[in-house]
Each structure stands twice: as C-alpha cells, then as structure tokens.
Amino acid sequence: MQTSDPFSFFIHNLSLFASKTAAHLELSFVAIGVAIVLAIPLGVWLGHVHRGSFLAITVSNIGRALPSLAVISIGIGILGIGFLNVMVALVILAGPVILTNAYVAVEGVDADAVQAARAMGMTPLQVLLRVELPLGLPLIFAGVRTATVYVVATATLATFAGGGGLGDIIVNEPTYGTGGVIAGSLWIVVLIFAVDGLFGLVQRLVTPYPLRRLGRKARTDALIEASWEPSSHS
Image 1 (cartoon, helix red, strand yellow):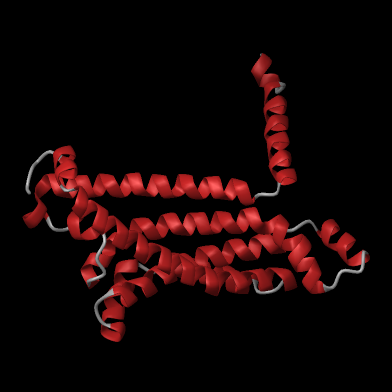
Image 2 (cartoon, one colour):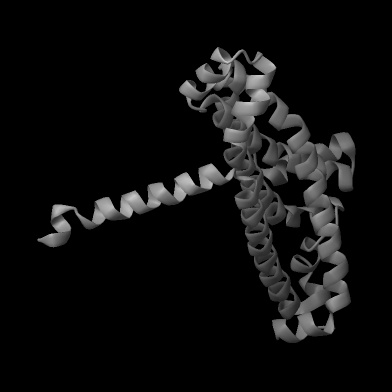
C-alpha cells in the first residue's frame, strides 16, 4: 500500500515491519555475536599482558575507515549475495570497536589492585578473572553497546546484497512510496534508540555496585567543585 503519510503506512503494514525488523535484528545480533567471540578474548589478552596497543589502535582505525558498502561490494565477489556477505561486513565494522574497548578496559585497571592480588598469591589467570575482568567489564560492555548501535544502523545496507532487513523498505520507493521510505527511516531511528537504551540498562546491571557508587560520587564531587569555582560567584 502506497501513501505519503508515514504513520498511516506503518499502521497498515505492521506485519511487513515485523518481518523486516526480525530479519534486521537477526542479522545485527549474529554479527555482534561473532564480533564478540573474535574481539573480546584478543583484546582482553592484549590488555592483560600490556602489549599490542599499536595493534588495537591500528585495527580500530582501519575498521572505522573502511566504508561498509565498499566491504559488502567486495564481498559479493568472494561470498556472493546474501546473509553471510553482509554479516562479515558488519563484523568488520563492530570488531575493532569491541577490540579496542576490551584492550583499554583490562590494560587500564588500577595497577595497585593488580599488585595487591598478586601479593595475595593469585595466579595470572586468577588476577585476570577475579580482578581485571570485573573492573574492566563496564568499559568492555560499553564497546559492545557502541558497536551494536553501529551495526543496527548500518545493517540497512544489507538490502544491496540480498541480506534483507528494513533497508528493503527504505530503498524501495517505487513499491512503498515516499511514506514507506520515511516510515522505514523513522522506525530505524526508534529501533536504534531502543537497542541503545536496552544495552545501557544491561551495562548498568553488569557494572559492580562499588563502581556504580564510585561513579555517582565522582559526579557529585565534580558538581560540588564546579559550584565553588570563583567564576560562578563573581
């Protein structure tokens, strides 16, 4: 059904949006899952041994610089048209972000906490699992959250390689009309905000309570300090 009113188009095509959204999220979360499996262990290990900062930063910069549409186009010649090609392109987009955050999260753990754990007789593996990972988990998950937003937004390009998803509506104005294109675009925005909000809630839940409390204290101290700046009382 073609209409110039995006809201009417959405209401009259709920089943279409439901199926396209399911395909879109399936592609996005499979790509994120693969990126997590590949990037987090490598980033955590590099951060634990305090090596590979050049590798982490370089991989991140290269991954962000590569246009996803170009990667999909190149992949068509290697992997063909379909789900796998687009999924690989999205993994290349998400992996560097997750890798860098995992590296920085573990590498940046307070050295005093690590030394205290070693002084208690913990093995390197115990230090990693009991000290570095719990303290670095919020930042690791922040990388996953950011990468997920990137992937959900970019997965609209899947339509150019037969990957399906909401991009099928956005780029197909002859079939769905202007209202369909606008409705699809707006629904992508809503979906991105919903995913970001959900992952933000999960990120808070996985943050150890002492760190959450420390974060609130740091914000409070900053507000108090700002309120007593000379310029604020002049």
